[in-house]
Length: 227
Image (cartoon, rainbow, N blue to C red; front, side, top):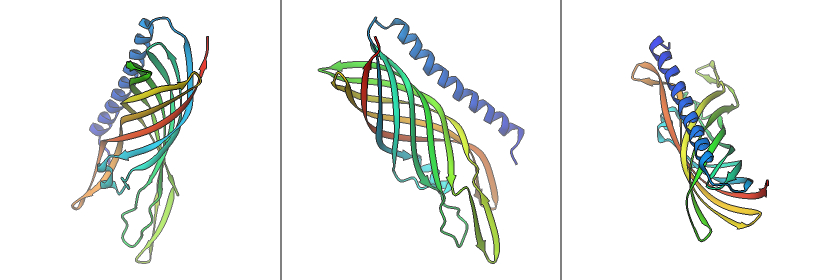
């Protein structure tokens, strides 16, 4: 049972996440307002990389080994600033912990993030960018229902989808190979919170915990001049 104190804490956590996302966007807009006049350029392209899950998720029987991450990002650049949208996807598994079964439903993680970036320095065509992002993380299970038989008694476990806010920061090393193409190496740190329940001794403890993840991606972008 979730107490009123826990519900209040959950609401505070959501508001804090919203405030952090708003801060990222305000920072990007403010920086854009003082950027020098320059051409508008649109970059769009796929990326592939790896994500490393928080080891604390293993307490809830997640497989926390590095997983492949794929996605698509589009960014609008002007001068030293950029803002865009990133769509990404990865997956892992989560075992049931029920004695006598080895079933481990697949956990599909899908994220949609707003990204703001500022170029910190440039040297011989190689650029270093700092970024912040915030958005929504969706967790879906496959299968989303599992029935196991323990001692002749069938037990059905329902895996409901979860949607939470996420936010984080990152760095990017970027180089325009031609006027129409750029390559970049991106590293991100991200955070999200989940309502959790686990057994501690003879009790089931419910709480809200914050988890973290790290990702490294390689992106190829096609560039378009919008002026």
